[in-house]
Image (tube, rainbow, N blue to C red; front, top):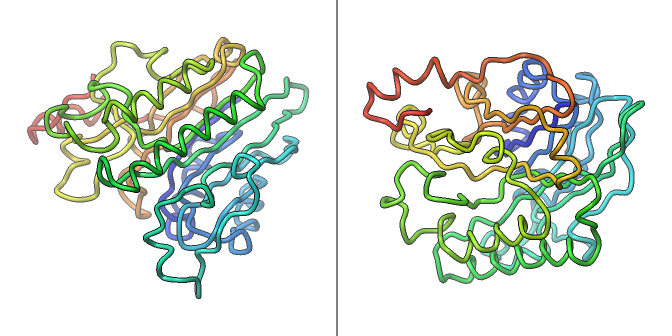
Length: 307
């Protein structure tokens, strides 16, 4: 079974790219973030035509998370917003002040489902979209830390570390200096502060594994996000801020974890994030993530060599 996570940076704007990638990589379950849609605007028919069911949790213009799964997979026991009730409406006609809302507790950032493949073992997936934080010490940053504390409390109060569970998503944290293109350049900023990294570690301490780093401990310069500006993608000035975090019982079934750099390229217009892909039990559809082919071009541009 193939499970992937991808911040699509507007499902409406990237829908053609998403369709392309579903065909390219054939995930069984795709966790998505930053859909920027209301539930009523979610493109259910498009996913159905591609052979997928779509469960969407959104609020309108901002945030939003979704899970797509192949037809035939049973999805049930949905949980949204850590069980804390409905989220705000940031759709058309909502107050413009919502854009500056720094309290993420009523934003569409969490969706969980129980997944039952035909003839396979049932497990739970969670798609998360962590707040950005904007500036260290700001109300947005403090809201981000509160959101991470709520995620950990949800695990403590409702989940069992011995169950088959996988959290995936854009967590907006680079866990270590090796997960950014230049630790000196980003020092003092969000995504790399010690408090954010400690919040990420608390998720792992509960009983989750950073599966990419577990499987590829010596890999350097392979990121999941690059700013659109200044040719950062072409120079590989990025960060590894998207993660797939299984419990041990699910992690022992993992074969490979890979970042699909090719999905960040070309047309249709890509997201600024690349999909992170994990295979359980057996390999999924082959695809070339493009790292080896890009290495020479990145170095020639004075960028960060992916190894």
